[in-house]
Image (cartoon, rainbow, N blue to C red; front, side, top):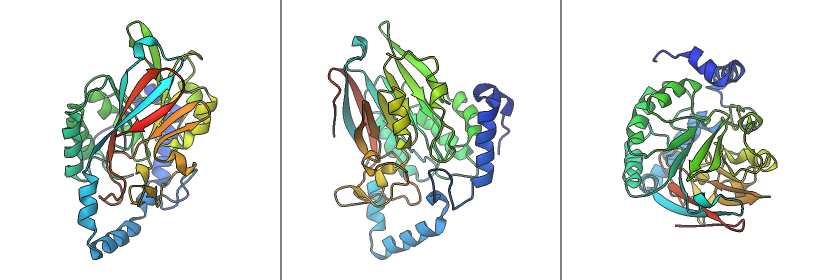
Length: 320
C-alpha cells in the first residue's frame, strides 16, 4: 500500500477527526457486528452473499441479475425552492453514488458511456467508491482517475462507509475535492448557493453538520451531501433545503414494485430510495451506480440522477 501523508490529512480535517476515522477503521474493519446505526455490518458477512449466489445460480437467475446491474438509467428529478436565487433557476446537478468501481468492469464501463450522453452544471458524488470496506484501495483509485476524465467540472464528493480517509490524497491528485464536514459556495452570475458535505454518518459516525454550516448564511440555499439518509432529522432542523444521499442501493435486490428486502439504514424505509420530504427538507436517495455483496440487481436498476433546481413553490417531482 502506498505511503500516506497523515500530516497533510491532519492539517486538512483536524487531529480529532482523523484519529476517530483511523481508530474506528482499525477496530471494526473486519467486524461482522456493526456500530452505531449499523447493527450488522452486512458488507463483511461474506457467507451470506455466497449463499445468495448459490441460490441465484441454482434458479438460473444470476446472469439476469448481472445484466440488470449494468442497465444504467438516467432519472430526472425537479426540485422547486421558493428562495432559490434567480441565476440558479434550471441549474442541473448530476448525482452519482455508490460506484464500487473495483467490482465489475462492465458496471463502470456502462457508467462512462452514460456520462457521455448527459448535460449538467455540477456533479456531486456521495461516497462508496470501492467495493470492500477494508484492504487495499489503490486499484479503485486508478479506476476512479479514469472515470474522473469523463466527468465535467465542477465536481465535488464526500466519503462513504467503504472509503478510507487515506484516499483523500488520491482524490486531490485527480482534482476531485472531497468535502469533509465543509461547505463550498457555488456561484453563478453573481448569485450563490451552498454545497454542504459531511463525512460518513452511517459507520464512522464522523459527520459534523454544525462545523459544516458554521459560516453559511441562514437564508442561503443549502444543498447537503450525506452518504446515508440517516442524517435527515439533523439536516432538516439545521435548515438545509435539499439533501442527496445513497448508501442503500435502493435495496439492490427488491421485490416486484421496487420493495427492498434489505436497506441497511436506520431511518424510515420511505427515505431509502427515490424522492422524499421531511418538513422543509427535500431529499433524494439514489439507487446508486454499483453493486455490493453480489454484482446483481433485481427490480432496482442502477441510476444516475439529474436534479434540476427550479424557483417556485416547494414541491418535488421525479421521473425517467
